[in-house]
Length: 171
Image 1 (cartoon, rainbow, N blue to C red):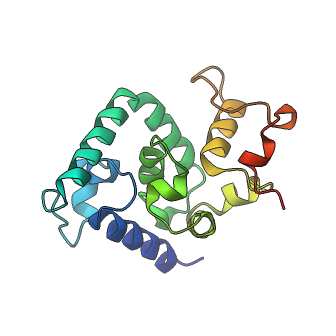
Image 2: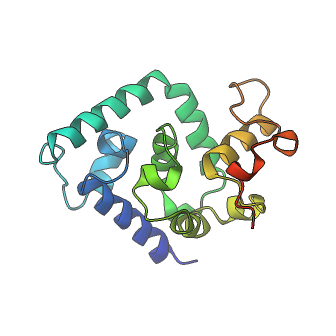
């Protein structure tokens, strides 16, 4: 995939953010330096409706209380990210701490659109997720399989779970 496609995804997420879609923290969870580098349109934080600004502030507070988890997830995602997709790993990790499906928290229109984003920015993860597990569950399951007690695993033993159909896109 081309760097152009990855840039389009970043531009798409910036558009969604600027229109108050999804469940993003302030500055999409990025540092001031990174935010200034990607925010070429200088999206002001204070022009969004007050409920959107409040939601972003609350998400920022949530992320601050789970910073170690967010950092670990971002670092893990970075291992699978195409270089031109920078800083998608940080955005995805920050939004992954929200409460709905990842595609909803990103403000995307569908799970299929999220899969396209993942294919363009994290193709190796798409390959690894061959059973089409829900992305947040997949992230945490993979992290649990690869780490030695760094975080509490939020993913069940999938093969034995009675709610398997809720996590995987089973046809």
